Image 1 (cartoon, rainbow, N blue to C red):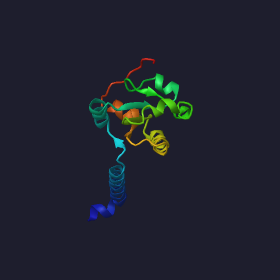
Image 2 (cartoon, one colour; image 1 turned 90 degrees about the vertical axis):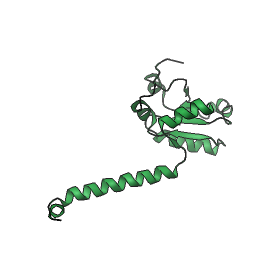
Image 3 (spheres, one colour; image 1 turned 135 degrees about the vertical axis):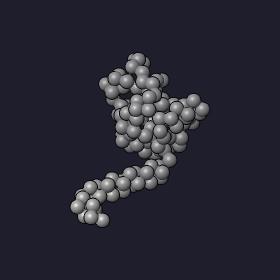
Image 4 (cartoon, helix red, strand yellow; image 1 turned 135 degrees about the horizontal axis):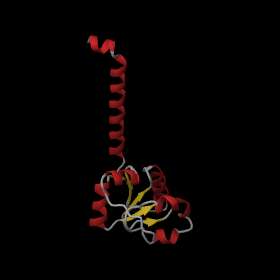
Length: 138
């Protein structure tokens, strides 16, 4: 007890970080569209999911998931016909960290897409998991 009184700020920091981790875990459980790199790989291999990279051209050129289609969010409207052809397939959408792809999934859901998945942590998590990166130009 004396330790906690003398080091209350460390205890408070530990409690706050634990609460944040728990909050993040509960939030992720509620979002069924989030998939890990391993789950994404299973979707690609077992369900022939299409991977869509929504980052800009420079980001895509610096490295992307092999065989990913590059459709930047800014081109969704212009490339609507291309997207419509993919409506019946599972789609894994990703960006650098997962934030932009979450917004893109909302746009696609409004357009009638149902089998949508967001790569948790984006390309950063994909690389961290040791998954392959391609630098080939399409």
